[in-house]
Image 1 (tube, helix red, strand yellow):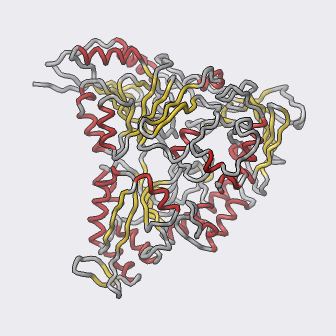
Image 2 (cartoon, one colour):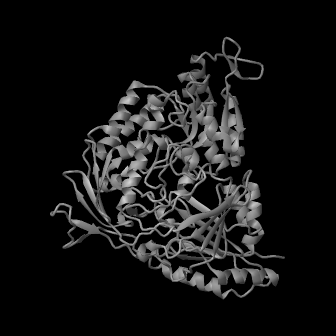
Image 3 (spheres, rainbow, N blue to C red):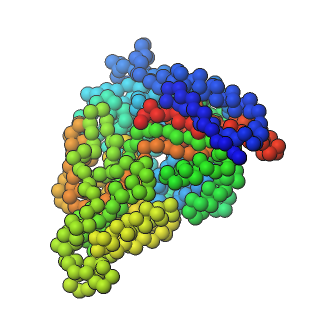
Length: 639
């Protein structure tokens, strides 16, 4: 009879869970044990993540004001003593990305993450939001003229071997201002910048608007990435969106796409002698020689099956049911797969159910307001997600800058109340019930609409929403359409859709709500929403002479109008990062930083491959032995 036991060792919010059996044979695992010992030792002395700016004395650059004060910072090397370089990382994607462009139509969060890997002027800490050297080794701020000066690292190289200079930032600014890229958000950002070359390795970025900014705000606004001028021969193609849809630019980042196909996925290779790893704070990232992303279509079940077969290294666990199944799975119990849970403070953008306000019945405000009470989001969180999610009440969360709080804490969505929902639906004309129990109007038309989505794991959650909505006299239809969701939204061929938008540290809502986009066949303002008061606020937020504290107040009012006009129903967010990883994938003792969203980023993340641990796993499999089960909880400090 198998006897399970758990060994818990707690050090500074770290514990390991070991599980074994008396009737099976354990393989000696010196490599794994050595790794665990290093983790325990390093947990006692977590690294110093701080990177305060340091004044650089006697630095003068011709062509810049003589009274400038130049700064740099000296972030620490975060490498674990257990860190090993090399090996191959295997990940998976649900489909080939929409485009290999990171701007313009179809460039979603995944495209940005995979292909917008050029290194910015300054790096931002995910722990403290402090600025650190990156493409620029030094910086200076002239607050009175709202101009930031950047002295570039003189040893930056593109992945094709060409040197990267100030000309590439000048070209990037021209590129991002161009209408040819069909990206209004990029256009707006760069139309507010005046970028000048001072010499091959120095440039200035002047902020053009009338707003008042702090030094940190000026650094944030002026910080952007280069584009390889030589690759485009200094010209922005008229047909850039179409011609470069599946073309990869050179990068100054650590990996470049080498090949792809629609069946086997994407293959990235490490840039040889990557220039940025001369910085101490980049020595612990980009640890793999190669990265392969396999394409696994359909819902998550085939992905779990193929993960269990060892076809890729890490898989995220999205809900409590998946975690329970993971704990009980054979390879976890037998010690070949580890469980990892990290805590973080999420910066969350709009997520939930989005409405097309020009599509009946959602063109009626009372219907949309009734939906606040008819959709049981709290019940979904408690019953489907076992209270492992946090309710969203507005279109953003965690968006702050110093004392500037951009999200409106006064907005609180009320709980499920079918009686209250029916009162609003009645005011919209749905005041009688048919034989199916669904509300109808005077024409006999049922209160019903279709919700589009692309995540098959939502099946159980939508089942609950469907059943609860019936109590309010509402019939919901859920339709999974996968990769075609974006096209449906862009063409306005939808009533409602469930999903999430990109999350930014500071809100950027102009293209989302401004009436100038209300009737355009684009992703901008897919709500089809027009409101003169909202337009004024959006324009004020974009162009007004405001501090960040004042901008935050404007954004809180924007969020209030979104709430009053019921443009969407916010859903929830997750403040843990849960993954299963084969034992040979290792993480540092601190696991993740405070605002770090992903654990499975092989390009800029801190994980690595341990070939000695892999050999132990393969030997145990060959000898029909098992290893010690491990579950790691290393960042409870952020709970």
